[in-house]
Length: 170
Image (cartoon, rainbow, N blue to C red; front, side, top):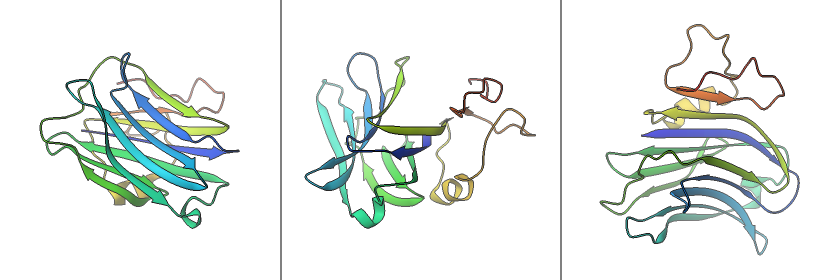
């Protein structure tokens, strides 16, 4: 399993997305605005190469607020195919992938797309499925290389212009 989380601040329309894959997208988590409604979507590439939307939820403007910093987290449990997406520590999407269609680890790049805005504190937890309570309790906690003890199985990118506080890759 894995967990990815980050802070983002949108400065306009166009949305936010995290993609993983080589060539074709292995999986994608996106928050986009269509026809005035924000929607949170998880989709993945099936073994036969089809892009499957595994879950989608329209969010009210009261949830997305449209301004300020927001936290998004994605967790995936490989054994069950369960995908959970949290927005500002609230569980917004809880879905199961089709049996036998799991996310396959690969060496493809992780791409984070923010049409217009800022990104901060991207965390990728390898072999770690963080719970909603863990995400909520740590979302305001800054992670860097000076922590003692260093947390296990996580790589962190702070995007603050300093190279000395990026935790070493796993």
